[in-house]
Image 1 (cartoon, one colour):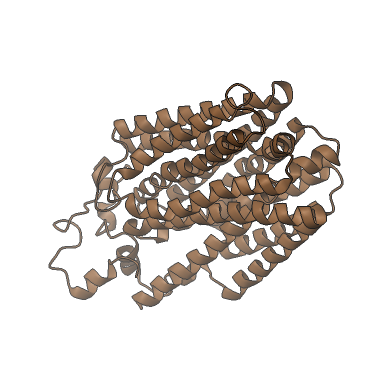
Image 2 (cartoon, rainbow, N blue to C red):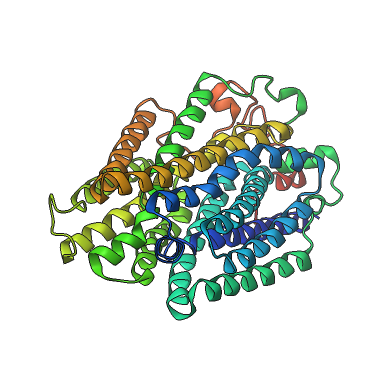
Length: 460
C-alpha cells in the first residue's frame, strides 16, 4: 500500500514537472525573435519590447494569490488542465498577431497559465518528505531550465525557417499533445494517498512530528522569517539581473555580430543548460556540504565581472571575438549563479512548515512565485528603457550591478547562518525555531515496530 502511494506521489509530481516545462517553453521561445519582430514589422521600440516581455511576470504577480485561493476550493488537476489548454490558445493567438497589442493579449493569457502552474507545483512540494525536498526543488528548477534551453533554440530555428507563425503553431501543437497526456494520466490530488487513515498519512508526510499535539503553534520564528525575507530579496535581484538582458539579446546579436535569432537563442540556451545540469546536483548536495555557498557567491561575482567586460567599447571592441566570449560567459555564469543560489534555499522554507498547515504552505509558495515574477517585471522593463535612452552599455552595467548586489546578499545570508553549513537532512521547525522533535528519542523511537518505521522512510 505504501509503495503504491509513493508511486502515485511521483506520478503526480512528474505531471507537474512536465507542466512547468510546457509553461516555460511557451514563453522562452519568444526571446530570440519577439524583439526583432516587434522592431522590424510592428514598428515598436526596445522600450515597448521590454514592457511586452514584462507582461507575463506582471500577470503572474497579480494572479498568483488568486490561483492559491483557487487551489483551496477546486481540484488542482482541473486547474492544471485548463491552464495548459489556455496556454495552447495563447500561442495560436500569438501566431496570428499583427501588432504589439495583440501580442500583449496573448502574453497576458500565458501569464495567467504560468501563475497557476507555478503555484500548484510549489504547493505540491508538501507531499514530499523533507529529506527528498531539495531533490524535488532541483528537479523543478531543472524543468524550468530545460524549457529555457529548448525554447530559444527551437524557437530561433523555426523563426529563421518559417517566421513567427510557424514557431508558435509548432509549440502550440507540442503543448496540446502534452495536455492530452496529462488528462490521460488523470493524476488527481486525492490519488496521492488513496485510502490511508489520518494517522498513517501524518506519519507518511511528516516524519519529524509524531503527533498533532507536538506540531508547533508558532510556525515562523525570527530566524526563519529573516531567511524568508532574504530569499525574497535574492529572488528579485536574480530575476532583475536575468531579465535586464532579455529585450536586447536579439538586437545586440543583430547589431554587434550581424547574426539572426539563432545566436541569441544559443546564448540563452547555454545559460539555461548550465542551470539544468547544476540544479539537481545542487539539490542533492545542499544537505550534505557547504559547497553550494561557495558556488553561489563565486557564480554571482563571475557573472558580474563578465557582464562588465562585455559592455563595449570601454573594455573590448564591439563585435569582436572577445566581446562574444564575454557576452556568452556572462549569461552562462548567470545560469550557474541562479542554480547555486535558489535551489538550496526553498526546501528549507517549505520543509519548515508541517504538512497539516496546508494554507501556510500555499501562502509561502505564492509569495516565492510572486517575488520571482516581480523581478521579471522590473528587469525587462528597465533593460528596454536603458537600451533606448542611454545605450547598450547601460544595460550591461545594470545587470552586472544587480548580480554584484545579489552576491553581497547571499554572502550575508551565509555569514548570518541562515543556511546551515553542514547537515544530514533538511531542518524541521525543531532545529530552527523550537518546533517538534526530530530525533529518535522523541519522534519515532528506535524501538518502534518495523512496519511503523517503514512508513516513515524516504521515497523509493
